[in-house]
Length: 159
Image (cartoon, rainbow, N blue to C red; front, side):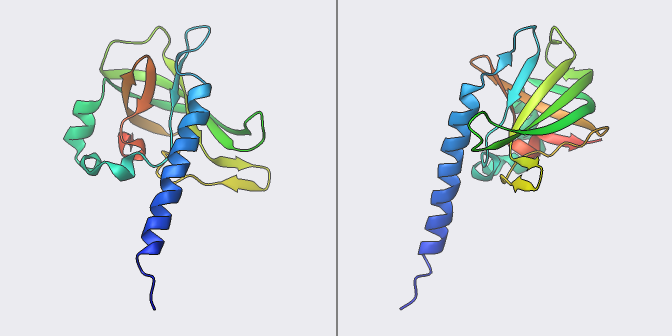
């Protein structure tokens, strides 16, 4: 007897659990302006995989409240306080605002789940990956004072 339907259901279950855990962990770290006015952009795993419109560039642009261009200044991965998850913190210098009013500061921090600390790598699918020195265009949305990249990795264009 074959059990071909269980594998996709199990995979979907793990994706959904990952989304819930990532969202819960990230929501505790806040979003929006940090003390000192810096904008924090929190990402959670798997969101773009569930939205079929994310492959449409016009959908991504229309959904964005901000479209910014700039340079990744720093990328650093760290354990959370409980040492149960790794998060990557990318500092992004904004050089140009294509859409949206400028922030008080032209530097934002993007927090994504996953990364490498020492010999341990925690991979979270459907995440934008940033590299120091790279230039990018990022599509951001603001919901209730929280900032997120529209459609995860589909909301980041390397320049």
